[in-house]
Length: 124
Image (cartoon, rainbow, N blue to C red; front, top):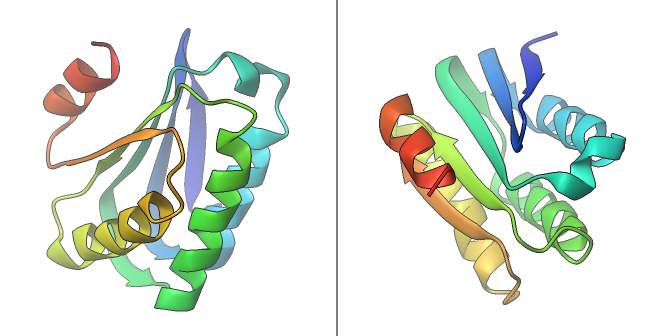
């Protein structure tokens, strides 16, 4: 599995390695959203700092944003942080944010380039 999910007291960290692709992203989302702890989440951190390649197109990014938009109606207070140093991955996340925010839903988002800043934001 090219990702691991680590549940924390108030959130979850999803850490991807290798290739970041649409299928694995959806699989990780499904694992989180189907878990009974999901309704108590305050934050989700998507850590792609060890990803070597991104394999998702704009249509797939739109589908991911729509999946998250559906979940946000059930769990409205989540802070969603993306941790990526790579400009291509940051660009994918910015596409996702544009799609998601165009639907005017309730999660807060931010893109970071280091874990220290990411954790400070999600726990504030």
